Length: 139
Image (cartoon, rainbow, N blue to C red; front, side):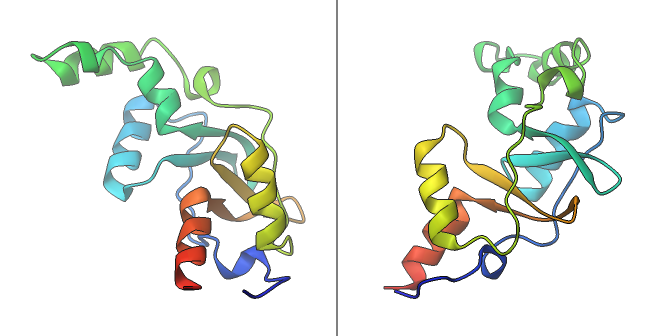
């Protein structure tokens, strides 16, 4: 296996982002449309937080209701803002960080995605899925 491979080799570069001015209904649409589980919350190129699909599901009652699921989701989502639901203390990594460093870090923490930031600018996102796919490609 290669050593010292930078995270920039496996990160997603065209990152789907959302702003605090958007709403949670928009966030859910982005999650589903793009088939992703993490969205950085930004203001311009600056990262303010991270919203995960799991965060959204925690405030949703949809799993317990069969009829009018969409209406219930929308009502619940309208009770909260992105800023209230997102994780604010986001840990970021530079694109020069190695795959090994990022894998070791994610293995110790309880989250599954890290924004990649260079010079205070969001340049990508790396997830546990990216790491698993990289490992699978090695065999």
